[in-house]
Image 1 (tube, helix red, strand yellow):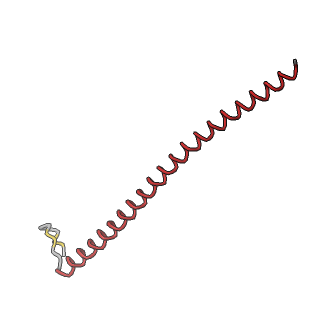
Image 2: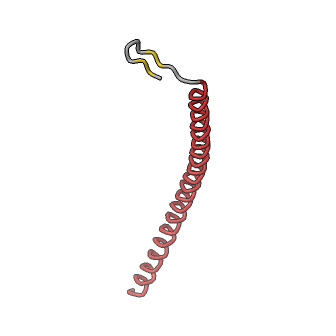
Image 3: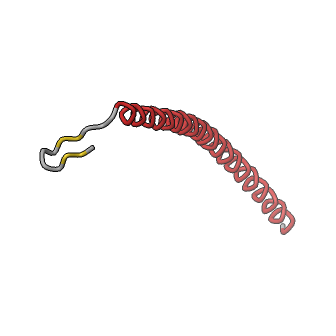
Length: 85
């Protein structure tokens, strides 16, 4: 009950208990959401770390392949130049 003149708010005990129970449920849902979000964040960080490692390995392999290809092309050029003499 709200008394507008004196601006006092009176609630019955069952209203207060209902509001408290609703609040408890909301807090529990928020805690579940926080736990879920924390787990998702942890999994995403692990995935990101793995992807960064994989990218680094692929860059190294790419550089190695470039080096081998350049050496092979130089050998081919040398063979061509050798045949011209």
